[in-house]
Length: 114
Image (cartoon, rainbow, N blue to C red; front, side, top):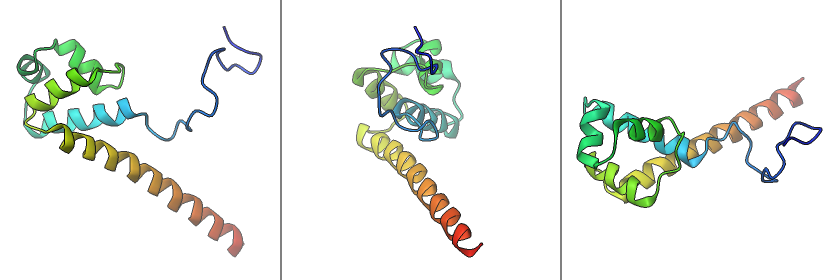
């Protein structure tokens, strides 16, 4: 049920701004990128990981919150270590924060110049 402001009841307060991607979104981006770099179809990677192509697709689109076991299986199917995958996802999240910070600084500089 929604509150009068349109926020669902039970929604976490202090949630990050939506322009910052969620972990699952950044993870999905990286998995899809790695799979495409290898020139593989969903079914090929999913088969090696022991999951369905539909589940892998949902992971790549950020629809699922996969368990660590699922992440490890897909990482292994893509010849990535969990450390490599985690670092790539963290770098993606950090680059978003840096871009947001630079954007805010630029807007402030333009405001001062005006």
